Structure formats: structure tokens, C-alpha cells
Length: 75
Image (cartoon, rainbow, N blue to C red; front, side, top):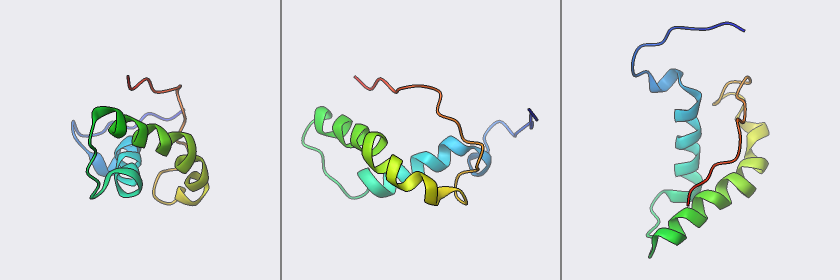
């Protein structure tokens, strides 16, 4: 494992920032959610369905060493 020291805030180098960008593009951008539950469902749907479909094509946008740590609990 190689550790790289990053500036305190360097979103262009942080893989999770790239994931958030893709999530926003696919699930949240220009969408009005009537409730918190609809918002949470959109995010869950992205990670449960859309992410699995898109992940192989995102190697260039999100480095190939991106790892899933565990399930996300949003509620």
C-alpha cells in the first residue's frame, strides 16, 4: 500500500468526491424531492442499482483502486 499525503482539502484527488459527483449527476441533479424519504430512496437506489451498472465504465473518473468499505446506513 502506498500512502499519499494530500492537501487538507483536495477534492480532485479524493475518490469519494468523484463518486458524489457521479451520484449527483445520476440521481439528484435538478430533482425536487417532496420528502426526506424520497431523497434517501434516490440515494439508495443509486448505490444499489445505478452504481453497479456504471462502476465498470468509471475507471477513468474514479481510480481503479476504489474500494467499498461497507453498506451505507442513511436512515
